[in-house]
Image: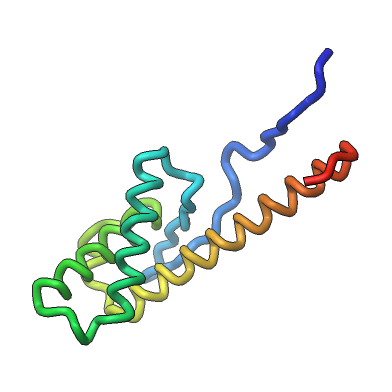
Length: 127
């Protein structure tokens, strides 16, 4: 029998939640999306971060695009969030949701690396 090379224990991982007006929404991560959606999320995230640094330089159309991009992204990363709820949130809450998402992404990435390192150390291999 061959060696086990990968163990997947959590098909449905525990997720952080964000509560909006008494309703909890699961905070998804990049790993919850397929390849195309993952790429779109990453691209939108880069565009949002770029625009955040130059908000005072954006014209009205640019600001609308920025806000639409944020609302679209938070609807994608908060499981079940309705677009009208996202639209009604003030900017500071939208920014806080995106910050929580990116912090969760970093945390999950660090946990995955730690888990992989532990698995390799159990087999005697080095990364």
